[in-house]
Structure formats: structure tokens, C-alpha cells
Length: 199
Ligand SMILES: Nc1nc2c(c(=O)[nH]1)N(C=O)[C@@H](CNc1ccc(C(=O)N[C@@H](CCC(=O)O)C(=O)O)cc1)CN2
Ligand SMILES: Nc1ncnc2c1ncn2[C@@H]1O[C@H](COP(=O)(O)OP(=O)(O)OP(=O)(O)O)[C@@H](O)[C@H]1O
Image (cartoon, rainbow, N blue to C red; front, top):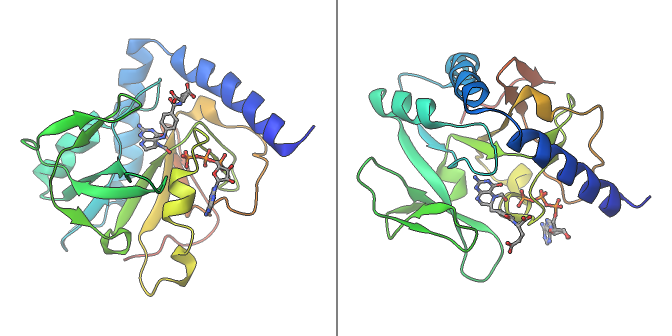
């Protein structure tokens, strides 16, 4: 089986698992995720965090958004680049005007953009993960393209994948362009190999 076929199958299976969670399980997972993540959110200095608006059964970051706003952390959401199949990051405040993108995911509309290296932390949505930090995404390659050169940037954000524990598999088939994550955070625990860079 080719890696592509394996990824397509795994994606189908894990997306169905994710969508099968009840509203109650989703709410509990969202609260637990906040508990696991809280110690990793640098406090004190000004923080810029990129996150996402959950869809398709993804773990919900609404409780985290509320907590970050209380802590005066600046939030950003991914915006699809008009033609490059990569992402821009736009300021996301409580009163930011929003507009749905071509996938129906809400994006801030005409708010301030930051360069990816100006972020301290990026929380990446994922379809599947393995305990070694491997990530399977939706298949658009958006995050891969956006952070392709990050290892050589003078400064880069910490990259944390976030997921339901039920999205874990033994091994995600990795391809050369797949970005390396610093850790995966589930509603149950943190999976990491080394230190998480402080940017
Ligand atoms: N919440 C969230 N936001 C995100 C991502 C994500 O995975 N989750 N992305 C992570 O990269 C980017 C969007 N990537 C996406 C890629 C494919 C599909 C999708 O639904 N594809 C359809 C078929 C294609 C179509 O409708 O044109 C599908 O697979 O059913 C959605 C988002 C940026 N924003
Ligand atoms: N840095 C890159 N430059 C050019 N093409 C890329 C790059 N990274 C990924 N791609 C292309 O994007 C496609 C999708 O890649 P992949 O299946 O790894 O996406 P994904 O990580 O699941 O998606 P996403 O990041 O959007 O959630 C692949 O066909 C790959 O060739």
C-alpha cells in the first residue's frame, strides 16, 4: 500500500471516530484539554497564540479562547492564502468581524496579520497523531507549506498538535514535507520527546 492510500484510509477512519463523539464527550474533552495545556502557556510576558475554530469533530478550543482572553493573551486564527495553499494568521478578538472560508470555517475578516515567526505558540488541528509527534492533517498541506522553512527561521513558535486521545495511532506514515511538532496535547496527556522551545 502506498503512503498516500494509507493516509487516505486513516483519515477517513479517524475523522469518523472524531465525529462520533457525543456533545457531552466533546465538552468534557475541551475542559480536560485546557487543564493539560495550561502549564504550557507561558505566562507573564506578552503572548501571541494561534489556534483554530473546531469543525468536523475536532477538539473544541472555546474554553481555551475564553481563558486566553482573561489572561490578555493575543489570539490569532489561520486564514487561507488567496492562491498559495498556505496560511496567514489574523488577529482574533471577541469583536473581530468573521467570514466563512471555502470550507465553511470562520476566519477573521480584515484584521491585523502577523508573520508566523512572530507567534509564540501555534496549536495545530489534526486528524491523527502518533506518540512520536507525527501528525496527519486534513490533507491540504496548509500547515506543512506555511511552516516548511521553520527549522531555519531565527525565531519560531512552539508547534503543538491538539487532539482527542481517540485520534492516537501507533504510527502515522510520515512524508518528507511533514512538519515536526514539538509535542502533541490530548485531553489525556502531553506527548513530547524533547523540550518545547520558548519563543
Ligand atoms: N479547524 C480547522 N481549521 C483549519 C484546518 C483544520 O484542519 N481545521 N486546516 C488544516 O489544514 C486548514 C484548512 N484545511 C482544510 C482542508 C480540507 C477540508 C475539507 O473539509 N475537505 C473536504 C473536501 C474538500 C472540499 O470540500 O473542497 C473533505 O475532506 O471532506 C477542510 C479544511 C486551515 N484551517
Ligand atoms: N512544503 C510543501 N511544499 C509544496 N507542497 C507541499 C508542501 N507540504 C505539503 N505539500 C503537499 O500538500 C499535500 C498534502 O500534504 P499532507 O497530506 O501531508 O497534508 P496535511 O498535513 O494532512 O494537511 P493540513 O496541514 O492542511 O492539515 C501533499 O500532496 C504534498 O505534496
